[in-house]
Length: 126
Image 1 (cartoon, rainbow, N blue to C red):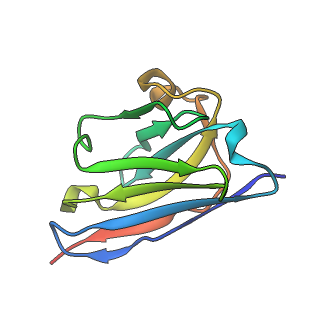
Image 2 (cartoon, rainbow, N blue to C red):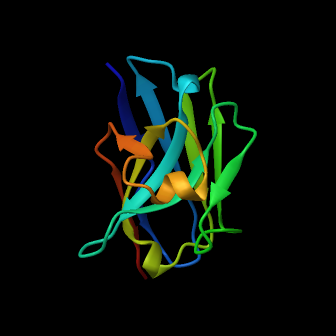
């Protein structure tokens, strides 16, 4: 059974960077599109970026475009999210999820992606 483990979160000052990892076990990630989602306290889950199965296509929401970069290494069965210029409003629990396709529609659709991990906390504070 597929399991995902997110790592790389932590405390960072505004303007700082973090690199999140999403490692899979029990199945190979190249069968799936992967999306990164975040949820801040009191707010809804938000899809922020996704990457298709081959890694050739990526999608970002406007709030992270130009600051975050998603990538994948199928040989390592891992997907990454490089986050630069972090801001207090980026503070949330970040999780990776699997889906069939990557698009803005899939990020926003309730069934577009499914969660198999616990998430990692990102705190942005001075």
